[in-house]
Image (cartoon, rainbow, N blue to C red):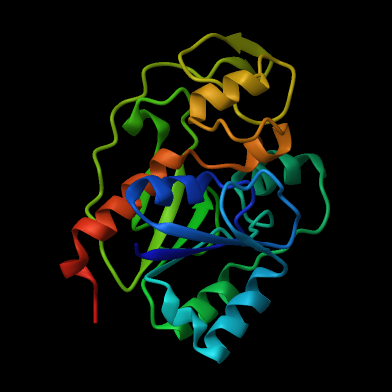
Length: 228
């Protein structure tokens, strides 16, 4: 099987999608995630990538996926949190991660939430594209290859919960925070298709596996589109 390296792997939402698409997966994360469903290296993702490049072991992989920390530029940080003076100093590792990914010579994927982070939005995926119970828009930069953008259906209603003091019901749940109509852990699991962890903090950070299953399948079935 082709193998994907999953950097900043967290609890494995991206990894499971690649697995379902037909990849073997190796994860890397500096935090300990015992629920991660595949083999993983517990350590700094950038250090690990640099070592794989230096030793030539990176050649074991067909594709590299990275979800580097970006809290400094995510929509919540640059919007509500900053306007209210909340939060502290955050790390943005997108640019240095991209620089290392370019050195691999491999096709790669960088994933980020909506916000001001400087990635190319080659793909924007949404839960409604896959019939999920979350919206969770995510942007993806594709390095060295291309994929066709899927259609983005109209949203069917509101995300359930309180917003600006108003409660609305709707077909989607909010997979972050708690209270105010936010999703319970079982609701988050069902809405995103994640069954291997019941840790709230892991679920709030995860992307639905359907996203990377689509990306992985696009890569495997359209390899003639890889750029050289």
